[in-house]
Structure formats: C-alpha cells, structure tokens
Length: 429
Image 1 (tube, helix red, strand yellow):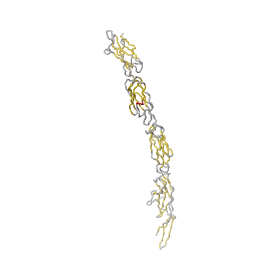
Image 2: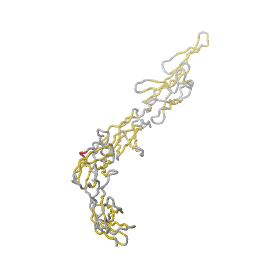
Image 3: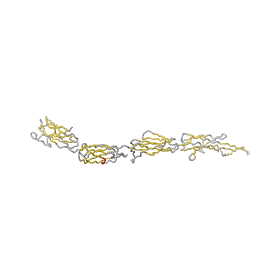
Image 4: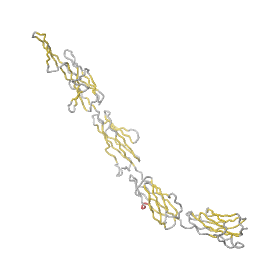
C-alpha cells in the first residue's frame, strides 16, 4: 500500500510496504518555481514565466496556478486564467487586462497532493488610467459680457496623471490650426485676433494613455465700432422740406445711441430725433430757423458694441437747407427771321435758379404794343436749364404777331419757385 506523508518543506514523501509487516519510507523535495515577468513599459498585458518545479528525483510538477499580488494593499487575484480548479501545465502565460498599479506574481506548482509555492516575482508596474487636464486660468479674464477686449489671451492648461507613468505631453490646437505639443504637465496657449476661437486640448501620459479632449471657447473683440453718417435715401440736396433725414450706419450692432450723441452744425438751427436699432439708425432734423448748410455727425464714444468697445466719431454729412425763391434777369430779347430769342442770367450758386419756364405771348392791340394777359393769350412756352449761370430760350413757328412779350418763372433744385419776370416787347423783323 502507499501512504501519503506531508513534509514541512517543499517536499513530498510516501511509504512503500511489500507486505508481511515490513516497509520503507522515502522522501524527496519539490523545487520552488522561479518566476519572471516581462512586457512593454506600462502595458496592461504582463508576460509571466517560471522555471519548472521538479523533485530531487527528477519528477516534474504536473500543473501550476498563477496569482497576481497588488503591492499597494497585498490583495491577490487569480491570473492568466488559472485557478485551483483550472491550472495550467505550461511554464509561461500572458496576464491581460491588468489594472493600474504595481504587481508581483506567485506561482504554485502541484504534483499529486503536494505543492511548492514560488517566491514573489520582480515587481511590474502597469498604467491603464488616462490623465486628466483642465483650464486653470484665462488671462486677461473676459469682461462681464463674456468678451476679451484685449489681445492676445493666454489659456493656461494643467494636467495630472491618475495612473503611475506620469503626464508626458500636452497637445492643443486653436480653431482648425495645426496641433502643438509640449512636454510636461502645464501649457500656455496664446490666442490672438478678433473672432470666436476654440482651443481643443488633451494630455498623454508615458504609458500612451490619452485624456478626454477638452475645449475652451473664447471671443476676442478689440475693434471699436465705426460709424458713417450720410444723407438718407431719397433725401434731396438742397432741400426746402422738413424734416431733413440722415442715415447712420455702424460697423456692427450697438446700443446706447440717442439724440444726445448727434452734433448739428451749420447754424441753421433745428433739433434731432434718432430712430433705429442694431447697426442702422436715422437722424431726422426739424425746426430749422435759417437757410444754410446743415451738418450732422456722431460724437466719439456714443455707443458700445456687445464687447463693450466704445465707438469712434463719424464724419459730417451735409444737406443744404434752401427755402429762398430764386431770381432771374433778362439779358436780351429779340425777334429775327421768325425766331424769338431770349437770354438771361440765373446765378451760379446751388440755391440759384436751375431751370426757367419762359412763356412767349403776342402783344395786344393793332400793332401789338400793349402787354398781353399771359393767363389767356395764345402762348408759346418753353422750359430751359440754367447752365453756368445763363440760359437761352427760343421759339419758332407760326409767329404772326408783330410784337411779342415774355414771362419768366425760375425754379431752383430745392423746388422753390421764384417770382415771375416780364420782359419788354420784341418786334419781329
């Protein structure tokens, strides 16, 4: 019969008896496996290998069980898919999915009912934990409206590693720009130029783990709103009408525009009323007390944009205020070869006559020497333009009367109609 004998060391023994009350006790040692570990730095798959466990008589262990020891708390976990119920007969295995930490491995060899436990392997550190990264500061800080009104702006990043390998690099890009990378745990991203910018960033540790991608959006607006004042569409120049209207166009939507920001110049008097919203407004001026050149402009710092930038000053737009009727004079009036010709002067100023309506009527009486009634005569009327301060009006056709008179009515650009002027008689020759 065979009797098992458990020894106190890594050994095994048995009792052999041929019978008849006699027997021999034999013993042998079962060597401890020597365990080694290997793998790429920080990898989560550790290759575990061990020397075979054999008895002093050369009998090899029949199976092995591998366990992983976490050096942080001493806890052990079955490794390489082995267990007492499912050992391996190999002398190496891969242990996948090893969590972040520093680990050692122990191999238990089994031969029959005897076991031999190895010493702990050398330590192997794994890192499968991604680092984290945050924006620690933005300088200068945005104003109360969320805008940066100076440039450049520095976005400071800081990363830390939840694993053991340590942060190796920080990478970022601005908008659709190229990727920039710096070593270490901090980075300063410099953003410049007006507009909405997006900083995209991440961190990578020495094990190759990459953090979640973060973004920071910022708006830089350092440009003051500009403004243009002009005559409004449909506003004539010169004008005899009220109100006189100017358009005001800012380079971007603004707030705070009022009549107090409008300067009226030219000495014609009047008051301004402002209407509009966003970037487009109008100035209506009424109550003028004199003729002249009415100017309108907007002062500096009149309004603010969304970022809080104050506006610049505008130029001055003008409209000539003209409520005075124009006048003309007759220079000559004659009748020759069946043609009436009248010349006159209307002045060179913008407010002077620009057109003259000349009505020719035959004189009354036998010889036509009496002035006609222009409201009922058989008239020949022409309208001519004043050019360089002078004009000429002619009439031809069936001019049967001997004597003719002319009535002149001037009009200027503003629409003012001047008093009628009567000429003396011209006799056809």
